[in-house]
Structure formats: structure tokens, C-alpha cells
Length: 281
Image (cartoon, rainbow, N blue to C red; front, side, top):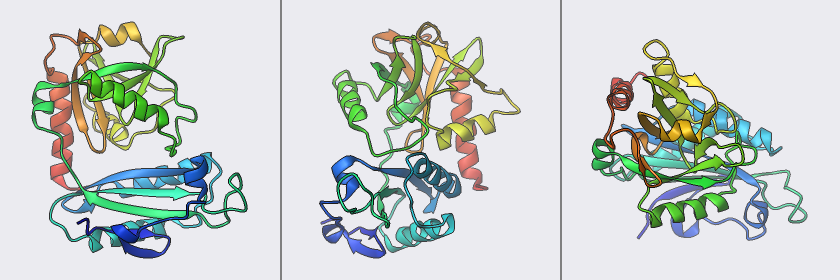
């Protein structure tokens, strides 16, 4: 039995009672935003950055949350503490337009939900051996907003699983430019330069951290990346809260470099882990 406690509109409720109205505009129209946080030592990682992004996402779709950053942080912290199961946690905060006068008019009071669950790590071999991506023709509208509309992502990930891939990488095939994966950002290494797409991508928290950590050592270049640059890369890795820094050794049916985890990617993985273990975040 799921004994987790979730926050739903001012109440802390067990899984079985954590419900919202069937008339909520988030359900009827997909009008809402969310963010996703992981814990280390049961502390929410870079929570301020995540909440800033949540607020920015809401602003972009003209959604009034009705809470301050400080209030949201307090709710998340309290929800984590109420879930006393052993191990690290994931935190998903969801904000919808609530129940309005009709399915196209948001309520004056949004629905706010915080879901805390057990964190499940990816197998260690994914990091030692690397994993596969597939390409998928799609450009996410309002890429800077982390909205509830993941219908394309669900289809893309289904296709990825069918091809034994971890992720699907969105590509603007008309321009032959890559952007981001369904739930991850991408970096390539070419001529030992680390490059990541600049435009039409979500401002990933892990992505931003990697860029910051590399600022003095090997500054990241932000620019458009073509498909030809992608497939001729020496190394590729993706970043995400739940994946950290994950090496990519194959895209579609083509090996990246020699098909093994490269030295630059390994150094970035080590840099990220050192930052986590240092605990000064």
C-alpha cells in the first residue's frame, strides 16, 4: 500500500485521498506547469533554482500561482519531512488553473499539488557503459515553460523504449538542428569543445549547474547544433535532475565516437559528483 503523504491545496493527504476535481482546467485543458526536484541526504537539491523556474513557467503561460517563492519552499520542505520512508526522494510540484467558470477560464485560485515519492536510481552500467538516444522530429512550443503538455514526449519515449533507448532527442528536421530531449538537455564534445544548444530549450537546472561548474575549466559554448555536428561528435552526454550527467554512446543506429564513454564526459560526471558530495549547495 502506498503510504506517501501528498500536499493538495492546503492539506496533507495519503495517496488514496489525494484528489482534485474532474473539472480542474489542468485535467480538461492541460493548463498548468510543474517542476521536478530530487533530494540528496533528504535535502531538496537546488530548490531555489527549481522554484524560480516554476514561477517563470507560470508567468509564461499567464498562470497565477497565488503563492510566494518562500511559501512554496516551505510547503515542499514540510511535505518531504512528512514522508519518513527510508531513502532519497523525488518531489513533483504541480500548479494548475483550478476549477473556473468553464473549461477555458482558470479559477482565481490555482490548484497546488506536491507529490513526494521514493527516488529510483538508474543502473550504474548506464554511466559506465553509456546509453542510446533516438532522434524525434518535434520543436516544443514555449520551450522555456515547463508545462503539463507532455503528449508528444510520451509518444517519443514509447518509440525510444521500442528501440532500447533511454531518451528521445527533439530535432527541427526542416533546419536540421537539435534542441533538447523529452526530459533532458544535451551536450556534445567536438574538438574537445563542450557545446550545448542555445535556443528553444528548457533552462535545465542540471544543465545550468554543469555550465557553471565548467566555466573556469572548459567553458561551454552555447549555439545551434546541427545534425551533422551531432553525429560527428566525439562524445555526447545528457543532463537532468533524475539522470545527473549521463553518457550517450549511440544515437539512432550510429555510434558516437568509438561507442564508449569518453574522457571529457567522465570528467564532467566526476565534477558533478564532487559538487554533490561537497554538499555546499
